[in-house]
Amino acid sequence: MRYIFSLISLGFLWTGLFSQEIPDACTSILVSKGASADGSVMITYACDAEFLSNMRYIPAEDHDPGEYIAARRRNGETVKIKQVPHTYAVVGNINEHQVAIGETTTSGRRELINPNGLLGYGQLMELMLQRARTAREGIKVIVDLVEEYGYRSSMEAFSIADPNEAWFMEIAGPGPGGKGAIWVALRVPDGYVSCHANLSRIGEIPFNDKENCLYSENVKSFAIEKGYYDPSSGEPFRFNLAYCPPTPGSLHSCASRVWSILHRCAPSLNLSTDYCRAVEGADPYPLWVKPDKKLSVRDVMSLTRDHYEGTELDMTQGIEAGPFHNPYRWRPLGWNVDGTEYMWERPVSTQQTAYSFISQSRSWLPDAIGGINWQGVDDAYSTCFVPFYCSVTELPEVYQTGDLQHFSWNSAWWVFNFVANYANLKYDYMIKDIQEVQQKLEGNALEAQPAIEQAALQLNKVNPDLAKDFLTTYCSSHAEKVIKEWIKLGEHLITKYNDGYVKDEHGRPRSVGYPEPWLRKVIQDRPEQHKLKKWK
Image (cartoon, rainbow, N blue to C red; front, side, top):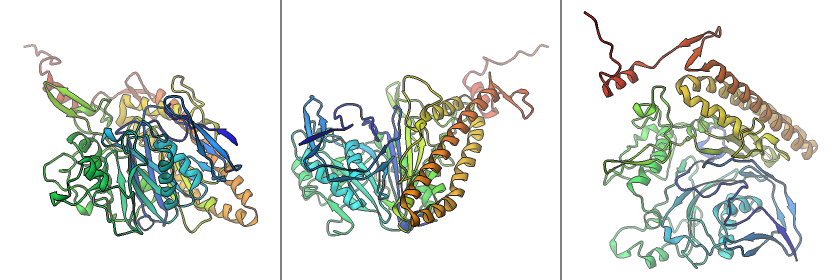
């Protein structure tokens, strides 16, 4: 018998592919094959938490019979997790078979957390990627693991994709000492888009649709046993109401993001903000919608960069946005004045994002070329998404390096954080400079994609390893170029926007002051403070 001591150190900070567990802190979008412009299945994930993300590559490996992964419980007890004969290579949040996964923490009922469970959601995600060839198989991997070793996280929602399907899975614990987990998984209908944002979304379960709906045997009976659902009420059983009932606060911070994504995908539906504003009797948002037009990768990038712009929830407007229309609000989200509770808007794109990705899984291409992890570091709005094919065998050091306590230009996380944070000084000026570089670099990658893939296809016919080497070299060189351009961008912002001035095209500093609407609010707040006397 042989132990393999892995990075699964349970009960400690998870520093592998996935984040520590932080509530109300992620957003995920699912785009089915028929809803995308090119036939890709796409999912997104914004991992929102204050930690430094280091992207990881895990090579494929063969394992000896009797091999185990050693894992530690919170109490220090070492537990053996059975290893499988072969594990697949993983790049970011996608594996060599184009299976991708993202998540959002929905928290749910706190009494259902099982401290005796061994595996948290981050560990489940990594183990699933190493063991699954399809999304359906990924669901089974997760379920089998929690059945054998127990589930210890709070309630969680997963997005799981492969080249043909996108699945939405929600999972909750059984409470202290319980076995396995309570869960349900639905396939997103072809041609539709779904999303989730820290609040359970699956309502009525189509129990008879075995092809498109999977669930634990006790999903309904457990809710009845616990008093979460009363069959005599005459109301249908709804998973989300039983296991994660909404509150005005969760609707405000979570359902608002769902509304915005669905509204932008299908404006023709005229979805109201009533539900996310906790208006009594308002209908919940549909689990998925058919988009008014099919979505490209660039469209999906745009969805991840949402601050409710152009809607009644627009965060670039109002005195809270400051004179330069900054869409960010510093945490905590909730606050109290004179006994009344308030909450800032919580957008899809937030300054606390550690990393984000958009995956493409494409059925018409070989796995090595069809799967892409478009990686973004820090806030999605001001980052640059960089492609990493699922077959690359190395990652640039700058994407794997960094320390939250020490700034470094050699860390992608710090490079993107510097630019994003400096932009807060004069946001609506600097964001235009950022977007110019962002659009150029992302545009270059998207325009090069067909030629790169055609070359890789030709190499793949001759020698698949040559194709992998070619894609590895391309991805690394492009990513390193992006970082160099972003460092130049940061240095440019420092020189162009200094001491409140804005330098013109000739390098001359100009006083731009404050916009008039904001000055009017200053006068309204203190009408006499800044007023000059008129002499007779």
